[in-house]
Image 1: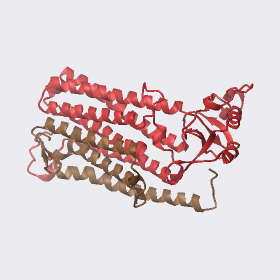
Image 2: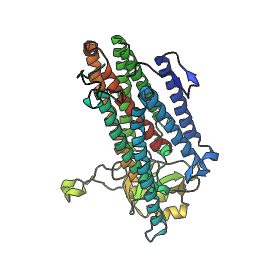
Image 3: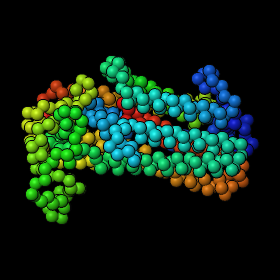
Image 4: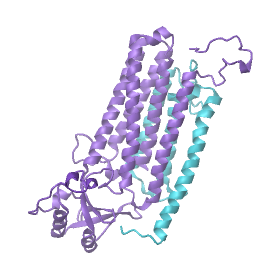
Length: 127
Length: 325
């Protein structure tokens, strides 16, 4: 049970005195990340929208990575996975992560294939 | 906090009563539910990704779709409102953790206060989502749909800004009657009647030389393809009907699947928030009545807290994939 709390985040870089303080610290961090996301979404720096990594814009990679960072802190500190047993945490996290990665891989590849069929195949669109 | 009963067989691993994962039955089951719900949501989001990758060149640009902020009419404010909604939800997550924390310390009064704030935050979020839906359904500038189901939007040639149907459509001496399903074949009713008929829009377009048509296809800059005046005049003849706003069949912002997924996924998430608020209200009253004080622990608050944070977690992903990426 979550009676003892682990009070450090960022791998021990930041230590809080109480659980309440840690909650506010995480809130500030999540707010900063959201602000960065929204600012990037509004500004859309050219350097990030015109360079690609693995077929996706760098900007989108940044958005997705920041989202995963936010998800990590929501799960670890708000859902207090940090205070749970390692075995419980691994069961909860890795099972969906594995299944979701599989799903993403299979569906996005299929969709890209269909896109190419529409583009290069006999079916054309008159947009 | 221990719900297990001593059976006298604690020494034997197979005798029952031991909790290798250190979580009570109720909490384990909440985690089970959250995992299956997470897989449901990822199924939806990945299906959205599937459709988007399939039509990657003509997906609507979210910045052009969600540009409104309440009470600021005519001000282009892309994403500010969703950012506000995200912040509200994170904030209500924080008050929820504070309630759980106060519960561990058996402070009934604080739990009541924090649960109350959480409920308020959830209500603001659901209300914001309703407003977002209403704005999306009502539409912005209006567009026409071609025979092949593509959307043509209108742009002012000089300023490059979008132009509303009302700004150029002519009023023709014709009467346009809403087609009801009882006046024809039952499946051919019309959901709504547009402000202008197709003839009025086409006539107005031909009469106003400085308007261009914009297609759905995105160019290298990530902007929609703009046709010149000659192409535009040819394109407008393909138009089949006027579209105002978005619903499950027509979507003035672009591809209709965008609207379908928007309604489905944010709707499903909004329903989660709504049920989360209901559950929070129930627990809130239980706390006031002192149920958990008598029980000796506030684990129930922790369990609904897990659900509430999960709703927040899902929103983080919905926010990214609908509004940012």
